[in-house]
Each structure stands twice: as C-alpha cells, then as structure tokens.
Image (cartoon, rainbow, N blue to C red; front, side, top):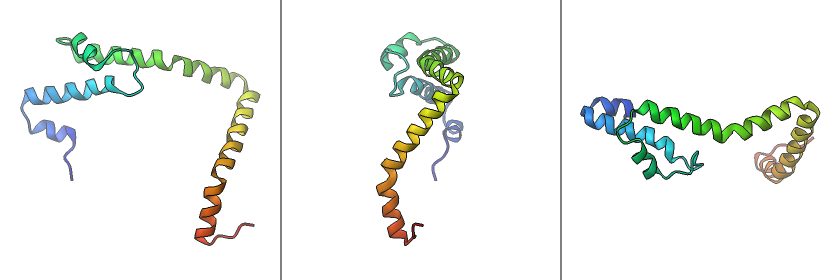
Length: 115
C-alpha cells in the first residue's frame, strides 16, 4: 500500500515538503483543458518567489473565466424548462440507440429474458 502524499510529506525535510506542495499546486496549472493559454514554464516563472495563495487565487479566477460560458448556458436552460425537457428527451433517445447493442449482448450473455 502506498503512503498518502501527506504522510510522505511528514517523512521528508521541510525543503522537500515545500517542493512537493509546490509541484501539487503547479499541477493545477498543467490540467489538459488549459484554463489559461500560458505554458507551465511561464506560470512557474510568473510565480517564482510569490506565495501559493497568489497562484491559487489566479488559478481560481482562470477556472471561473473558463467556465463562465457553461454557467451562462446552464442558467439559460434552467430559465426555459420546455427547451431543457426537449434536450433531455433527445439525449435520452440518443443514449438508448447507442446503448442498445451493448444492452442486448448483456441480456443474452446473462440469460435474461426480455418481456
């Protein structure tokens, strides 16, 4: 069983703990979706010598900016219930069609009887 990152941090020097924490926090900026257009190296240079609070605040702001269009669309759909129900029904129909072959194979393999 592997030790958790926190328990590993307790067994190493304060300098190593700081380096590990920094790497975990910088990992937030390496997310494949790319909340910003900056490279990980640019982010590291920009926050060299700055506190982690600054980095975390800026990452939070970048994520909020990235998700703003999603939130706006969500609010739009919640305000128009008939459209939301239409989209949900359409998605359910597509899911049924896409899953039908897998479901049929599962029924056959498990010996279930369709009624």
